Length: 345
Image (cartoon, rainbow, N blue to C red; front, side, top):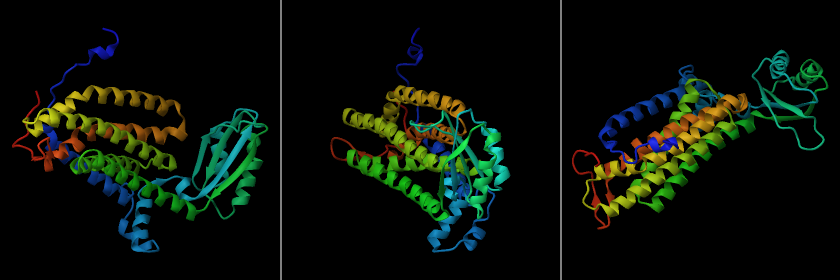
């Protein structure tokens, strides 16, 4: 009986294509709800009013609507970051309270790794929105550090202007779009254009749903989340390539099998790999979510949800989309979906 992985069935005959229509309806509905949430700030903002109040070109105004759609962190709002060093453990709750007394805007406290040379053993980072009286705020925090940890001091002060943070937000979105386009081009080059479209729709599905979760629940959106989304894109395309590679092999091997059956067969043959890979990542991320601290909680949430979405989209979005256009077999003729989808096996 051990290892327990032996309990997994060696061969499955699940009928994915049979439920492709329902899965498509569910995915479209969830993506539409996510887009509505992104442009209405989780149903908290009026996008028309935001557009009218924003300045710049129409494209910049649309970008302003999207900025209101998320609970942006200091990375994207603009702010000041203080590196606190101390020879004694730092009470992060007390440090956050000190920051809130000195500054009315958003406050964020993170644990930090101290510099390797000539540094005290304990460090933390205090982030707050930049105010007109920034110098007074920093001095007030400096004066109250003794109540947080004896001997604590401000080792470094960094500021991010609103203009730079706006460029970071737009640059992050451009990075996501460029990553998806490059992934689609890679799939197109390696397989066929039908596979590239399926992979692109799967990636869009994963990213839009993850952004919708962060928008609706107002989870803080920082540069770390952009990194998580790029990782989700990489994970999703890796899972999709495995499925597509098996599908391409089966297209050459079973030239007479209906396309619906062949897709089901390919998905069943790669199911154990999909489950093992996804479960391994999920277990690691659950530990990161509960033990990684507040600074990594957003990253863990994005990765957890994105991996679940990526696994689902590989099975019910990327592969079934091929049924819409068909693919070429070894004969060079396009093989369209033949009638109603049939089951594998």
